[in-house]
Length: 245
Image 1 (spheres, rainbow, N blue to C red):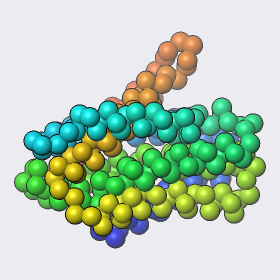
Image 2: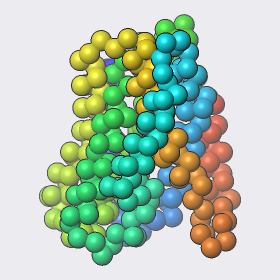
Image 3: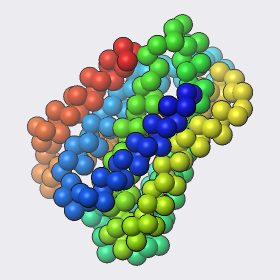
């Protein structure tokens, strides 16, 4: 990974959290649309790019790792309580213990999904025979992390954390994906290990993206608005064009 990619991972999360300090009481509908866009893009790159890459290595056990990643994300959601899906309102009267629990869950997820980034460029080049068009995983993580950071800071503020403490928690969360990439990058991973690690992240992405997309705008009528449908189509379209980026 290039230094700019580490910096992008870190400061983009800080940007998402910084927006929450100003707009956390006003941005519920835009947050849902951003989440829908990021969920659609994650699903698109998972189906179009990540799954073929993980299954292209003959000796890998990608299927088992996908299940492991899916179940791990399901367990982590017991900590996060769906905050990464925009469920901030559920926690507005909760104490600081739940806020810390959510931060831990989000940070663990961020660390794990950052790990394949360190050697994904080389893995992608080997599997596809060219070095361009490999930024889709980085873009997917960045897009997903911005609304997650917004939700985390909103929850911290609703839990009556001081702004300085909220900033410290945000910085800790922002460092997790770069740290995961740095830790994984200190090892020389074989194509089989990379395929398995990618499978683990795929399982997590499948859980997150489908949960976001299957949540309707109105739980009583199971209605999806045209605005949400539009951003979903936009996210899928970006995933289709990912090889050109």
